[in-house]
Length: 330
Length: 219
Image (tube, rainbow over all chains, first blue to last red; front, side, top):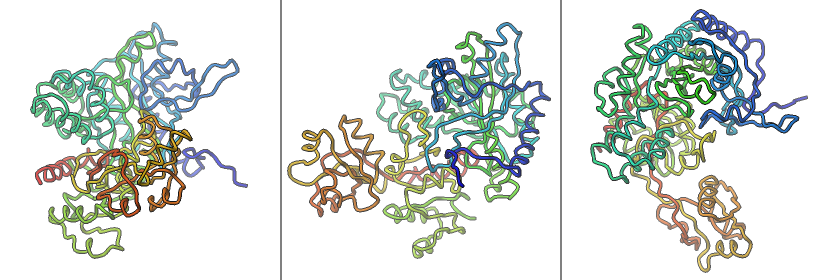
C-alpha cells in the first residue's frame, strides 16, 4: 500500500539520517564550543505572539484552531520564537545571551518547484551584543561551523539592510515611492528599478547611484568606491571586517545590494553561497528592533543554515561538480 | 568551457532564438553549430544550453545555468503575486535587451465585444490563455470577474469555437489575431527579452557578469 505524504515533506531513512547526523553533530559541537546553549521551542505557537515580528516573505503558512478557538501557527523560523523566549524566560538576566538550535520550520510552497514545506534549520542567536562586535562573532561562528562540516568553497555575502533606505533618503527620493523601489530590489529586478527611477524627478547622478550602488559587490574596494551617501553603511561593514580573523575575512564578499526577504533585519545582513549550489545555504543578520517588540529591547544578531541545502552542497563538492571550478573566482 | 566570460548561458529556442544567437556571435562565440543543429540541446564548448523560453528561469534559478535570456512574459507569468508568494523565482533580472518586442493583449471576436456582453449579462467572462496568472491578475486588477481557461497551444481556437468570450495572449504583429477575425480590445503589458542571472552566480561570478552587462549596455 502506498500512503502519500504532503509534497515538500519527506521521510528521512537511515542512510541519509547518518549523513545528516554527522553534519548536525558537527554544527552542534561548534555552537556549544562557542558558548551557545541549545534550546527547543514548540513547533506550534500562538499566531498573535509571532505576528509581533515583521516576517514579510517568510510568514507562517499553516494555521489551526485549538480547542478554545485560538489560532495556532506552525513556526516559519526560530529567530522570532527565541525572541519570545528571551523576553519571557530571561526578562532580567544580564546580556549577552547565546542560544543555538536545530529545529524544523514550516513554509508555504508552490507545487513542482522542489521547495521544502518542512525544513531543518541550524543556527544561533546572539542577544544583547551590538554591532560591530556581535556581528563579527556571529560571522566567526558561522565560518567555524561550515569549516567543521567540511564545506570548502563557500563565501559569505555581507551587506547592510539600512544601506538602500538611507541612500534613497539622502538622495531625495520621495517617501511615497521608497517602498516600491525597495521592493524591486527585494525581487532582484534591476530592470524594474531602472524603469521606476527613470520616472522620478531626480538628478542624473542620483538616478545612476540608486541603480549602480546596489549592484556593487566584491572585495573591500567596493566599499572604497562607494558614494558618500552610503558612507555610514560602508563604515559599519568595514568595522565588522576589521574584527574578523584573516581566514574569516577572506570568505567575505561585500554586497551593497544585499537585502533579505525577511522584514525584521535592521543592520548587517549576510548570506552563505557555495559554488556547488544555486541557492544560498543560509543567512542571517542584525535584528536590533525585534526584541523590543517583545518588551525586552536588546540588539541582536543571528543566522540560520538550511541543513538539507548544506548536505546537498557538501555532496556536490564531493562529486566535484562543474560549479566547483568557480570556487575562489571573484 | 569557453563560454562568454566562462559563464553558462541558457538560450531560449523559439521567437527569441535568432537575435539571441546573433548577440552571442557578437561576443565572439562560434555559433555555427548552434544555428545549424536544432536537435542538440547542450553546446558545452561555447557554454550554451538551449530550451523552451519558459524553462529558462527554472534552469537559471537552480544554477544549472549562470545566466539566461527569456521574455518578460515568461518572467511575469512566474512572478510572485504578493509578499510571501512561494511562486517567486529566485533570479536576478539584470537588463532589458530590447529585442523580441511584443504586446500582451486581451482580444475577442470582431464586432460587438462578446466579452463585454458576457460580463454584463452573465456577470463573468471566460478567458482562454497560456498565461493564466497574468490574465487572472490583470482581470482582477481591472475589477472584472473572469473564469480563466488554460490552454497549451493555438489560443485563437478557443473564442472561435465559443468555448470562451476572450483570450489573453502575446502578439508581435497582430497577424495571427487578424487571420482569425480577432480584435485587440486592450493592451496589458509590453514584453521584451530580458537577461536574468542565478543569485549565487551573481555573487560568485560578479566580475564575469558585470563585464558582460557592460558590453551589453554599450551595444
